[in-house]
Image (cartoon, rainbow, N blue to C red):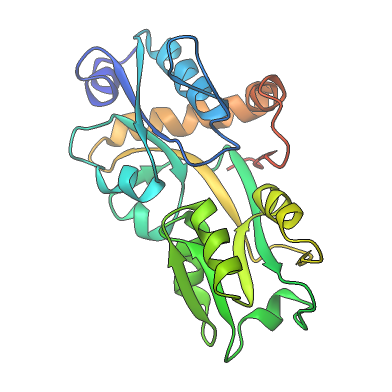
Length: 241
């Protein structure tokens, strides 16, 4: 292993992997010692194995907080959705997995298509600083975004204040739909969350190593095997970068 890559990605001799604990598709269990289990922790462990160092997970309750710590030395790699705003500080790989984001609308809603949602008088509940929330912030022109601190909190906001739409990841919206009889999930996706691996932008050789590792992991079937091993529904292997 190139000494520069090791110095950039494991300067303490351990690969410290920032993990977004709020993404239930990527972290869907706990290890016997209480650590995170799921696709993203398993992928971080595979990267550490390739580097020849141990892995240590650095958990974050929300992805925005993980992104805030980019370049501070709190983590060496971070596994979150790749978004332009985050890419200002983080060098991302191409996506290793994708998740559709769409809308849930309440019973009796006249909204029928994704395009219908971006209209005057429409209020959209969203989880603040989620990857899809950052996309909405850049792309919604007429509707009003109403943010809450997490996925469950955004559903509570949508339900309790009678908002016109709830933005979210399709698998989570299926769960929310069951809690609101008569609600509907709109067809299609307004965007696809690109789950990627990132490191500080200064780590140029480390970033190149990560890009190559992720492409190999997709092509070899490693990502598909991790999704199957953890029994995840709604997460797809991303196409080649």
